[in-house]
Image 1: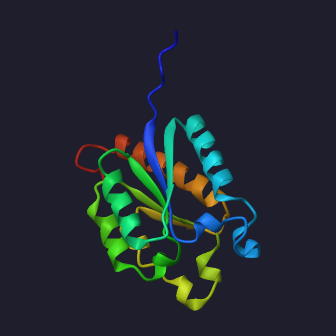
Image 2 (image 1 turned 180 degrees about the vertical axis):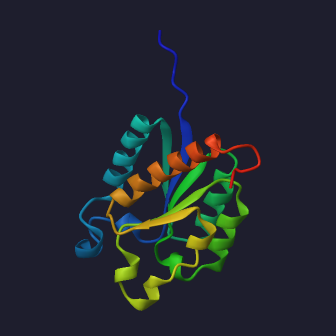
Length: 161
């Protein structure tokens, strides 16, 4: 009987309208469904030593609650805030309030889109932001968390920032 490998838990949190992936504006967001995206991320997590848990919420309050709860069990979050990226001070404050790293991701390149989408209220509260790589933005977000933890573990005492 082999010992079970302990994987670092990570929450991948999808914001509003991402439940419509594969059907919503495929010329912008692609044809991959949310279920397939989640499956790919869980498989990648196994390879990377992560236990990837996924959730999607259309409401701002539910996203905030999910972030608050993640602080009790997850080691980090990969977050696509969707349209709340550009409008939600409350979501930005929830990210800043939790003691775990959050990576903001976007399927499309928000800086190549409409002017109102080129500003992120949430990014400054995150350890970084990745956009424009389709579903791979999430994959890059998982890798970014791993790099963040690796750098912090290697930092001399008192130099963890």
